[in-house]
Amino acid sequence: MTSIKGYDRKAALIYANRFALTRNPNYLDFTNLGGDCTNFISQCLYAGSNVMNYTKTFGWYYNSANDRSPSWTGVQYLYNFLTTNKTKGVFASVVPIEQIMLGDIIQLANDYNEFYHTLIVTMIGDVPSINSIYVNAHDYDAKLRPLNTYQYSSYRCLHIEGVYI
Image (cartoon, rainbow, N blue to C red):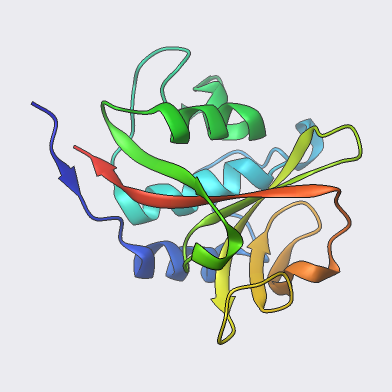
């Protein structure tokens, strides 16, 4: 039977702040290979969960640049994993922006409704809104960047519910 543990938001935030403007040498930098944003967010999620899902193709894991799941580095694949995972690793639900918390994920879409960028929430003002949320990200590296300074057509907020162990 699968059990659930809490997602360590503090550990995820510590990691996000430490590596927002640099790279962890334990992971390949995908900046020139399609983008590093989701790779960075996966590292943050792993820091807050310490559990990977080694299911081939549909899991969420990183052993090396050549041995990783599509969800580790792909925006849509990460969304698919987080919102459907029922076995091992982090899992999430889509929530309105007003329910977003520190350590949660936001993904941005272009005019064609293609989601192309993944961010981690690292600071929130008094009431969560587009104007009070700050994020860290790779690809145009950012630390505590206001969400309202990004160009996008739409967004989705992923609240990390916990970790299947």
